[in-house]
Image 1 (tube, rainbow, N blue to C red):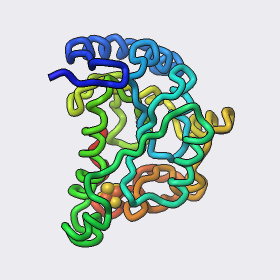
Image 2 (image 1 turned 60 degrees about the vertical axis):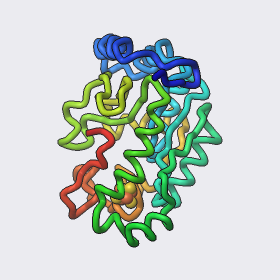
Image 3 (image 1 turned 90 degrees about the vertical axis):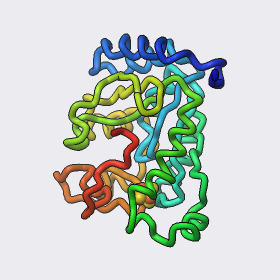
Image 4 (image 1 turned 45 degrees about the vertical axis):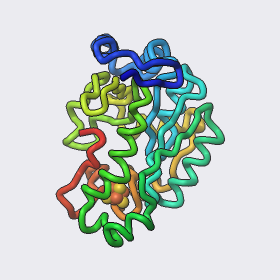
Length: 238
Ligand code: SF4
């Protein structure tokens, strides 16, 4: 069965795998070069994932792919500052923010599974509010761009620049793999990109409010995510 994207019929897996292999040869220190390559090979079939910690990745990609879709996982559990940053990214950058919604509202989930599922079974909560909606949405694209960096956590040190995403069946592009948090901040300052104020308040990695805690200066930036639980990733990038 063929899948339709905004730009027509989605290319087959073999072709996308070949493009991923080509992309893997790019210079991983040249984020703008990677953005140009993505624009050239995936016009109208590219999506940018953004947690709204800042708008750096949407800004970078929109330079060569104006109006690009920016996917925001609207779990219903975000900080007010994150929703504010989403609004600024939509208003100030040349992008199209797409809210990726779960099947159930928070109220419906509470009725079906009981309140505060994130405390009792965060894996199920993330599966319903992040992973299923993302997988459903990515099916309509040929490539997605993420802001994953190798320095973010021990689980991310081997992140490739470009790969074929086996789980979602499309090309995955990580142009910021070699960047540090300081590089992200410097880019945001240089280009006047919207930044979530929580970034300056002890939250270098921002997720849903119930599952994100402040971290001490110098600590693993992602140690505030699901703090106190064995869970370190929502499953999107693993
Ligand atoms: S991060 Fe927490 S609140 Fe958000 S979807 Fe996952 S478990 Fe639920």
